[in-house]
Structures are given as structure tokens and as C-alpha cells.
Image (cartoon, rainbow, N blue to C red; front, side, top):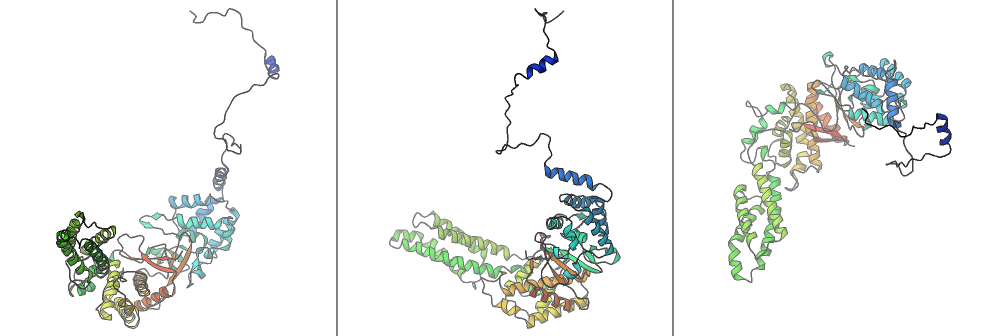
Amino acid sequence: MSYFPPPKKPYKYKSLQDVYTESKQSEVVENVQIIGIPEDGTQEQLGAVPDKYYKQLKRLVLSKADGGVESLVKQLLRLGDWPEIADIDTLVLEILLGYDVDVQILNKIVDKKKAGTLGKLESCVNKSSMWNLLDAVDPLAKKLTKNFNSLFQELTHRVQPKIATVSVGPGEISLSMFTNATKSNVSQGETGDLNLNGVGLEIKGDGGRLGSSDYTKGIGKDGGAKYINMLMNRGTGQHFSQAQTPQLRAKIALKAAEAKTQYQRARNVVKKHPDLEEQIRGTYNQLDKNLSDLENTKTTINPELVKNNIQIAFDTAKSYQHPVLSKAVIDNTQSVLKLLEELMNATTDRMDYNWQDSAQYMFNHDWGMTPREMAEAFVEMRTEEMDPGAVASLISAAEKIFKSGDLVKNLQKLKPVQKGKTKTIAQHELQRLQAALQATSYQSAHNFTRIVVLNSRTMNASNIKFDAGLDAGGTLRSVYKQLINNPNITVTNAGVDQRNKGIGISVRA
């Protein structure tokens, strides 16, 4: 059974030769529109690999050969005493394969690393001024690729892995690849993050913390904390948790004075209308009384009671059709209420302890302590436990600084509205003294020789040096002097520790 009827006439077939012959007589035209052609009319061939990826693919293939980039990179990492960890090896290799690397130069770098003659880091870590990480790199490395600066910066910024639970900071791997530095082997007595011919280098990126965050957790427990006990015994407002009070009271006084003046202007509007003046009198008297109390910073107040009184009167004043409150008086009153809320929180007794609260206390308080008491209080801000002799040495050094310098005098001269700000010379000096204290206690626990502070984007760096011949107090004074004389190192919050148990340091961009 067939579904198709037979043809009425037999099909006539053409030979292949006839087909080709006839095709020459007429052109076959296809109406094809290609979408997405660039305006200049150029087209990429179908199946073509972009040049960038072709080069990367070619580098990857070539890197696998004996003596290729991959094996040389791994040799450099092993010579730098980095363990064979896939996350490190893979990322470093990936970065290098993004550049046209000269394998012969890379091979010579490996040879210099083996011979211990690679780079100029030794001279850089002894400088007192700011330097650049590229200054420490071996000149031969700059011939590795025409874009070596970019390659090195990428290695410095991107390669920050974790080995077990320990984070590797910026610059540790890039420096060890192109200088004589190696990863420190703590089990063999080496110190710091990197070892440079026996010199321990502690590397700190932006906001690098100066020490442990754990030690200060114990302050205030088991009968310790002279600072806390001393201030608590002095009565209300003496504990450092009330450090913000003078500054907040000064801010409140300014806003209260402005609001009081503006309420008086509003009151004057209705003086010619006795009925209206009588209606608003009680509300405006309440506002005037409470704002006057706030205007005088020496008046003892209950912030919660004052806040409630102002809020009630403020809500009532807003409900009057006459006088209508201006935007300025509304904004100032709301600022006063917000600041009173902050004051309520600031005067709540707390026993937590961190360097920011302690620093703010010393910035804002009227001090009222002898240099010895201040020194004992100050030394409790260290981040590491130290033996009694070292602590006594630190206290003596701090006492001399508080006795002889202008630091305390300058802080005491601050007006209330200035206290707590960190733009004055005196406050910058106190921050640097705190950084010196924590750097000293940190170094005493780990015994490194240098702290190298670096910026992983600009690659600027600067050093803090430690002299093995100094005791703890001598080290404190030495580091403090270095930080005063080297404005390139700045004191910051500890970027790696949101609890702010320690101070961080950075280098200027």
C-alpha cells in the first residue's frame, strides 16, 4: 500500500556537470542580515578566540612544560618557605599567567633566591622615612614583564590567604618571591611574619592591629584593673564609661541655647494677643525652664526626666495653630532630644574595657590624677600580659612623659566642645603614645625586630624599629619618638577587629 500516487511523468535528472555549468550563468543570492555588526563593519570570525584569552591559553599550555612558569613559581614559593597549598599556588600562578612573563628571567630570579642575593629589602627595613615596596624588589624582577609594577601590586593586594586559622597579610608572599625574605618558622625560633637573614619582620596592612585582642577581656575581673577601681571610687562621672558626658553636655548646651532663643521669638509673635499668650504660657515656661537648665553645663540634670519634660512640651507646642513653629526650632529641639538620649546611654555604668573608651576618657576628662596615677591607668591599655618588672618599667616611662611633656597641659586647655575631637596636636600625640604602648607590649610577646606598615594599593611602607638593648620603658619612649617624628604612620581603629580591643596602624597613601 502506497501513500503517494506514482508520478504522471518520469522525473528528469541533470548530470553534475550540467548543474555546475548552469550555475556559472546565474548567481545564487541569499538575503542574509547579520545582527550586531560593529559600526565600522568589522566582524569577528565565527569560532575565533579573542586575542587576550588566546594568549592566556598559550601561556597556560607553555607553563606546564618542564622548566616552565608553573614549576618555577612553585620553586620560588618553596624557597620562600611557603608550604604547598593549592589555594596559594593556584592564585599566584593565575596572576602570573595574566602577563607575558620571560621564563629565562624567572629562572634567574630562582637562582638568585637560592643564592640569597635577591632584592634590596635589607636596606629598606632600616629606613626611618617612607619607602615603596618596589624599592625592595630585585632589579632583575622588573625585566620579568613590561608590566611588572602591575603584576607585583596584584600579588601584594590579592594574595592574602589563610593557612589553617592564620591569615597571611598583604605583601608577605609578594615580598618573599622577589627579595631574600622567607616565611618565618616559629618552631625554629624565628619571629614575625617574615624572616630576613635573622631579622623578624611583622607585616601590617591598613588598620593592622598592634597585639592580641584577648588580654583586655580580663581587665576588671578578679580584683584587677587599677584604672577602673580608682575611677569608680571617685564617685559619679569619674568612671571612663562617662567619658562622653562633658562633650555631650557641651553640644546640648549649644543646641538648647539656640532652641530657647527661637521659642522666645515665637512667643513674641502672640504678645499682642492676650488670649493666645495665656494659652501657650505654661507650655513655653516648661520649655524655657528645661532648656535653661541644659544651657548651663554646670547644672546637674536627670537626662531622662529633662528629655520627657521637653518632649511633652514640644509635642504640645507643635499642636498650636498660633504661633507656628519654624523648621529651625523643630530641628534644634529634635537635636536636643537626640543628644539627651545619647547622654542617657553614656551615663549608664559599664564594666567593658576597650582602648577607645579609655582614650576618650583621657581626652575628655579633667584628669584630676597625679602623673603616677595616670601612668598606672595608661599602662593598663597594653594588649599583652607582661611580667611585673616590665610593667613597672612601662609605668615609670609613662610617668616621665606625663610629668615632663606638654601633653597633659595641652589636653587640659581644650574647650568642652573640642574635647573628644582628634584633630588637635595633643590628642594626636596621645594616640601615638597609645600606639607606642601597644606596639611595645606586642613586641615583648613576639620578639620581632621590625614592624613594616604597608599600603597594599599604593605599596607605600614605613618601619617601626625595636632595639634589643632597651628595657620595656626604653622601648616605649623609643617607639613613641619614632611615631612622633614619622607622620607617615597613622593611628587608626583596628581594621581586623570590630570589637576595637586594640589600636590599628596604617601608612599614608
